Image (cartoon, rainbow, N blue to C red):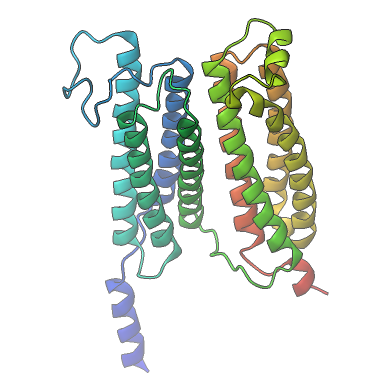
Length: 323
C-alpha cells in the first residue's frame, strides 16, 4: 500500500501542472484579438486596405515604410497588431503543451486557435495580394470577406473555449442533450451566417455611401444597383429571425441547465442592444464609429453564445439528472 501511494505521489510530482495564470493569459489573448478585429474593420471602413500596396508581408516593398501616408499608417498598424496576435497565440499553444497533459481540452482549444490564426493571416494576405481591398467592387471580394469573417469567428470561438476550459470549464459532451443540442447547433450556424451578411452589408456601405436615407432605400431596391447594395435588405431580416431563434434557444438552455443562466441573460441583453444599434447605424448612414461598435457587439454576442453552448453541453441537462 505504501509503495502504491509513493508511486502515485511520484507520478503527481512528475506530471505537468497548469500555469497558474494561464486562464488570465488566455482571456487577455482573446481581448487583444478583439482589438485587432476592430482595427481590421477600421482599415476597411476608412478605405485604407491598399495602404501598403499589393505587398505582403512587406509594406510597399519595405519592412518599415518611410514617410508613410495616413492610409499606410493605418494598414501597417493593423499588420503589426496582427503579428503581435500571432505571437501571443504561439505563447498560448506553448503554455498549453507545457502545462496540460496529452488529451486535455485546453490543448485542443490552443491548437485550434493556432490553426485559425494561421489561416487568418493567409486570408489577409490573399486579400492584399489579389487586391481585394480599398475600392475593389468585384464579387470575388464578397466571397473573400465572407470567408474572412467566418474564419475570424472560428478563431474567436477557439480562443474563448481555450480560456473557458483553462478557467475550469468542463469538456463538451455532444450526445445526450436532445433538442437542446440541435437548437444550439442551428443557433451557432445562424449567427455565423448573420455575421457574414453583416460583413457584406458593411462592405456595401463603405463602397457605396449615400447622402440620405431616401437615396439608400432607392439604391437597395434598384435592379441596377451593385449586388453588395441590393443584399442590404437581407441583413435586418436575418437579424430579426436569428434573434427569435436565439431567444427560444436561450429559454430551452435555461430550463435544461440552470447554470447557463448568466450566459443566456447576457446573450439576450447584448442582442437587444445590437438590434437598437443596427437601427441607429442605418439612421445615421453607417458612420465608422457606429460600425465598429456594431462589430464589437457581434463578437460579444458570438462569445456569449459559445459560452452558453459550452455551459449547457458540458453535462447532461438538469431535467434528465434530477427527478
